Length: 186
View 1 (cartoon, rainbow, N blue to C red):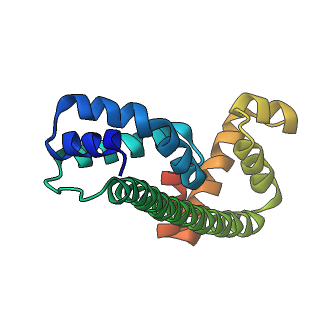
View 2 (cartoon, one colour; view 1 turned 30 degrees about the vertical axis):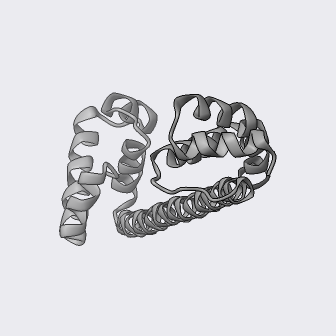
């Protein structure tokens, strides 16, 4: 082993601060490039290398040879990179499962909403013609005066027919009526 490498290794083993600076200048760039081969993101690769350097500094190990030390650095970076990818993969799978659950909830909610609308319109179809027409215009968001003008009826007739329609729907749908009210369907 060349004298320079031997002295460097002795300083690393002795945890001398100047050895840490040498470690950085000697290995940082090549280890970051090596890590980018795994993680493909420079900032993540830099974080990995910095964590490995910290581990070297905090570790109580004595490195017997310069090559053993180099191997330790590269293996540590490789393992940290693979661990990062594993964690990233688990995180992505978890987020994907959350999205699938949300989509499943959305589908269930949509199906329930469609079923409620189907029941509502089936019940509305049972209403007498005038009552049904008034109630459908009400569902479109038209006010009593507008409905009265459109159908050439008095406002009182419109109010009475709407009240009859609501009573009939409430009676026919029972508890489902209250669900529709709470969802803003009616």
